[in-house]
Every structure is written in C-alpha cells, then in structure tokens.
Length: 285
Image (tube, rainbow, N blue to C red):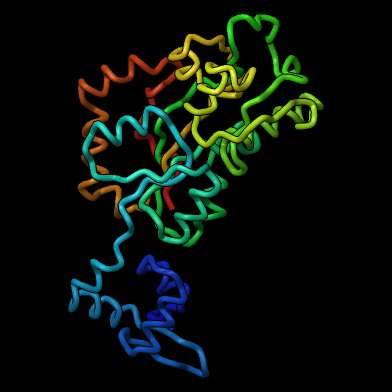
C-alpha cells in the first residue's frame, strides 16, 4: 500500500485544497480507488495522469505572489527586478496560513521564537506537509523610532502614555513587541495605541507626520525620515519558498538582480541591513 497516498497527500502533491481533490473525484477527472469507503490514489497513476495532460499540470501551479511580512528592501527589489512576482504583504503569520492554502509561491517572515531563533519552528509547524525551503533575506536593525525632540526615550519603558503606532495582529513586529512587553513587565494598556499600520514604512511615516509619537520600526525607515532610532534587536528576515518555485524563472530573475551592481547601489539607501548571509538555507523540508 506504500504506492498509494491519501486525499490530503494528493492535495499537497498537487498544491491544491483537499476539497478540490474531492471535486475531481466526483467528476471522475482524476484516477482513484475506493477501498472500504476510503479514497486512495496510486502514485504511478497520478504521474501518468499529469504527464498525459500538461494543461492539468499547469492549472495546479501556484500563483506567482510574494506573501507574508513587509520588507522595504524586498518590496523595492521585487519591483526593480521585473521578476513578475506580485506582492500581497499582510503579516508573517497570515503569510504562512496563505502559503498553506496554496495562495502564493513564497512568504516573508520575521517571527521571533524561543532561544533567540527566528522562523524555523513556525515553518515546520504551519507547513509540515509542504515542500519548502527557508532562505535568509537579511538581518535588520529594529528598535524605537521617534522624533528628535523626544530625546528622553532610551528604552521601551519610556513609551508609557505616548501615542504609539501599532502593527496588525500576526505580524513579526507585533510578536516581538509582545515579547518585549512581557520581558519589561509592561502591557499594551501602558501605551496609547492610536492606529494600526500595515507596513513598516507607514508606521514610521506616522511618526514623521506627527500622527504618533513613536513606533517599533526599522532603522532604514527611521533614517529615511531623519528620525531618532534606538536599536532593540537585530532580527532575521527570511523567505519561505515553495521548492519548485525556487528554480523557476520568476524567482531566479529576483536572485540574479540581488547579485547585481544595481542592487548593491540600492542597498546603500537601506541602513541597518546585513545581507552577508543572503541566500543561506536555514531549513529544507
């Protein structure tokens, strides 16, 4: 029976949802067997079915979309490289959920975990049945961002009663901020959360425009807007990527751009980034 796989395994293999497999079965559009009321699928028959119908194989390709957390340098690189990868940033945890639902080829992550680790356990847990790799994008300097007239801010404890630019639930920023609150015996009630901002740039811009007093943001964005910055962590931002998509043209165009002189020039505008281990695999499923 090792030559046969289950409905969930077929869904993972074809990168579709389980209900789509049931729909294919109901229409007799996929080879299957029913044994004691349970659906089983022959690996060989599935391979033959795919090889006989390239249109079917093409229909199961993942949307060419980068999901997950927002990174300003990654966003700029995706645009400048003309790689054809669309952008749909909505937070690290949501990126993993959407990857699990076959909504994109990759997701940006910066999820803080125990023992000063980043992202690996979250990928293992959320994408346990997926063929993925976790590749380092960059290490980023992150901390308190505030206007230069508020020079008395030196730590997170100095944020009490200030208007703070919040990030949406499930972002890597929100996860690490919760860790800092707990570490310093603070709660979110100690700050005044004015509004939720959905990108690193928007949160820092809110400080620049005076909508908020401070935020937890990137050094690169603070420097762009001539704001004060106090580093609290050097976080690791990774890209979790479908294995097959790594070798396909769109992502390889992005990788080629990131090894170009144009990219090196672009990097100079992003202070606080360390790309010395760009491309390193931290996990392979």
